[in-house]
Amino acid sequence: MNNLEIGLKYLSEDNFEKAEYHFTQSIAEDRLNAEAFYNRGRVYRLKGNYIAAINDFEKVLEINPDRKDAAVAIDMM
Image 1: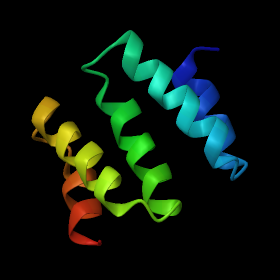
Image 2: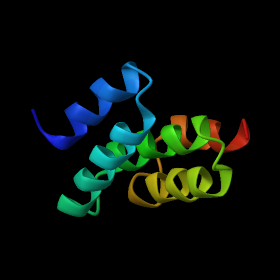
Image 3: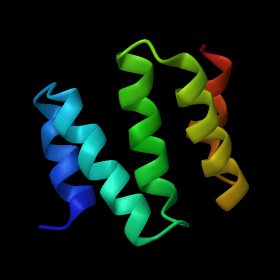
Image 4: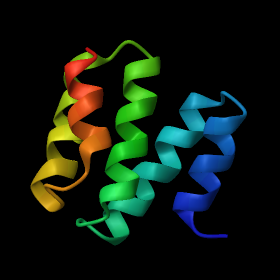
């Protein structure tokens, strides 16, 4: 399993610290990994770190402007 997959596993288990770590590792491996930024943004939002969440969702849109889920996530905050 790669870091993104491991992060998704931990996110599904509500283990936000480990999920955040693995999404960050995935981003370090590929700075254009929109999926890792999106899911780390979800973790930040769940942890109440809204500024970091918005930053990650905006990065998703910078990488892929067609990611409507990131735009919706920003609007919901």
